[in-house]
Length: 236
Image (cartoon, one colour):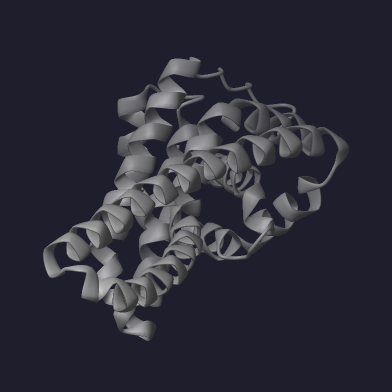
């Protein structure tokens, strides 16, 4: 598996990959901006409405303390948006991966497995549905894990494991569906779930690195192309 990781890292910044990299990073940034703006508007509306309601309920005497509370809420909003962007990064990269999976997989297959039968590109709508499903599942899992972040060590470990499971699952299935129907790809992933999860740990480590994590779709898909090839060769 380490050999596959080094192969991916060696190819990631080659000229063909750079073209896909710029497109995927641009789309990931666009999605993040949209998400952050939507979160900001929602939290701003909730805090403004809530403070206004408190002032009307308590009376004008509460204006000073509520103004201080407003500054605290504003600071919390900024911190919350930053934390939200970090927590949503795996979900965003999973969605972005669905749009560029075939370009990335084709580059890896052509470079490392030229004698093998090439995969068949997924219909864009199917890839997008898989990406959206994984993104929504990621948000649901992270919301469940969020309370555990209060316990710093346990929460960080749980978040890391959830990320490894989710992204390993998503990227392996996208790579496998180039050669198998969706149902067979899911069965193949379940048959080799330990290997897929272990590869997912490398992807989770990659997505935890600020800035560099914008390239997670390239790293994740490329790694899982190698994993799929290895499993099919070993086990048929």
